Length: 185
Image (cartoon, helix red, strand yellow):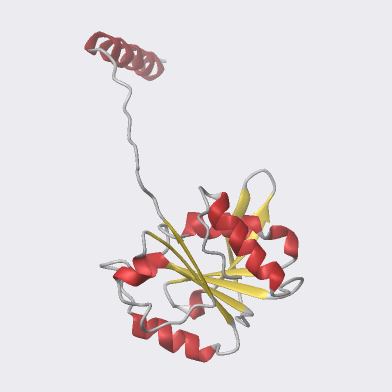
């Protein structure tokens, strides 16, 4: 799968990921292990896991490269995929390295990644990052991904809804009045 055409938005990340797993015959019982930074990478891992939930995969989250802390990823009805407290034994058929691990000030190195990869030599290797993070951190010269999904977040727009001072004051007075009534009860 060497598709260099541009993809867009969240589906542009999720569809190639699912397609790669399907094309390479990953399915029921195969283990996909996601390595990432807790908090930063976790929401993206949960999105990826949700995209492939119907394949019958066993999905696992590993914070940083601390495999002894591996946790099962489960489907929670009405919520989506979530990291559970259940510990998992690792037997990855595919390893997903998240680009957050290559960011500055994250307490891992490309050497840590290579040591982890050496333990699971027969696994497929998937890289998922934003804004060319693996390239910027010079990990591309050290690690050969079977597939790399590099999404660009550009531009990022931020808007604020402004309220007048009187609207803000009315809100604060109303909140204060409600709290005062509760304390007086």
